[in-house]
Each structure stands twice: as structure tokens, then as C-alpha cells.
Amino acid sequence: MKARVFVTLKKSVLDPQGKAIHSALDSMGFHTVGDVRCGKMIEVSFKPGMKPDAAADHLKNMCEKLLANTVIEDYRWEIDPSS
Image (cartoon, rainbow, N blue to C red; front, side, top):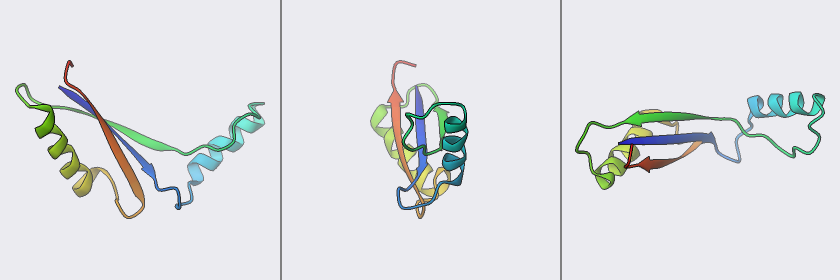
């Protein structure tokens, strides 16, 4: 089973990388873009036999302890039990 964790800066936190991407897109002619926020995606593979509910508990602990800085970042995940 695999899960994908998405970590992004909170809306109240300035995103300089997102601003740089937005500026680059604008200079390339993509004037329809209103805003860009940049984040990271982390893929986690669990060992066989892990149940989705248990995986969700593990993912929450992983995010709170390591994968996200919860002071300035939000996180969410998707679990794909078929993978």
C-alpha cells in the first residue's frame, strides 16, 4: 500500500518560491495565473498487511513528528490501498 503526503505552507506564510514561479510564468506569457503556492509531495510505501486505518494513524504521527513543520505548514495525505 502506498500513500502520498502533501505538505504546503500555511496561507498566512509568505511563499517566496511560489512568488518566483509565478513571476517566471508571467514572464513566459502565462498571464492567466493568479497565484502560485509551492509545496512538496512525499510518497510512503507500507509493508504488506498494513490496514488503511492503521496507515492513516501512522501518517498523522509521521507528519506531526517529521514530515511537516506544523507551525508554518499544513499537510494532507491520500492512501491508495490498491498499490
